[in-house]
Length: 114
Length: 111
Image 1 (cartoon, rainbow over the protein chains, first blue to last red):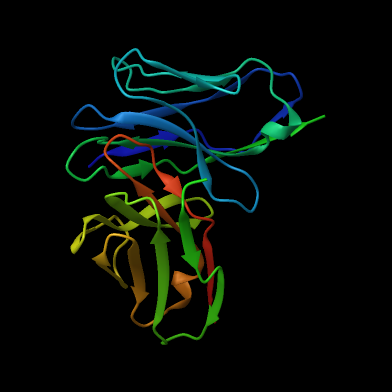
Image 2: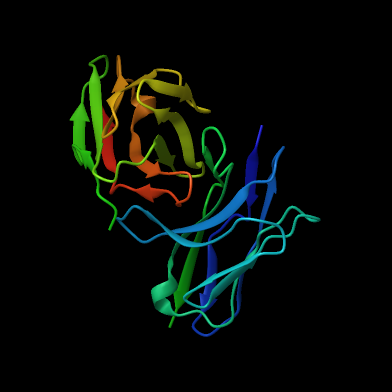
């Protein structure tokens, strides 16, 4: 079945450092790909998305490019802030398909130190 | 914020008792999901619904059942709670052309 694999954390960075969180997927069709973020004590909220190959999703300085050839959707940010500390989840969905089922990776905890 | 409400937000129950968690939406979205979140496992799909009375199992459905008798409500029932079902439960909603929106979560402790 469809699955998502993302790098284990925690990832600890100093403020203004460059961030990469790796995500790869396995899917039979052509899924949509997402990054969700969860701040402490809260539910998940969408950070960015890409619905087809070579699309780049971006939001709040974060970016990820849908790479079909490497089945990857790595999250990057050029300069992290303390406020970016959260858990980041990569996910895929047969968006617009019969079930719209959404499958998540295990999450990566990011801790940014001042 | 998307109109999605989970209840209760916190619950402590004893092993062997039935428990029902409720997810209510005001967005008229077609799809609804129940996930559990556990350390080291991320979010795992328990059950999902793609319409009224249309539901299917996710990857961790054993010990859980669901019902969706109307568009706005999706109920998750633990027929006989076990300690392994201690977790944080999230409901999510989506439509064919939107991302998923999540509720605030329900922290369930089975003692």
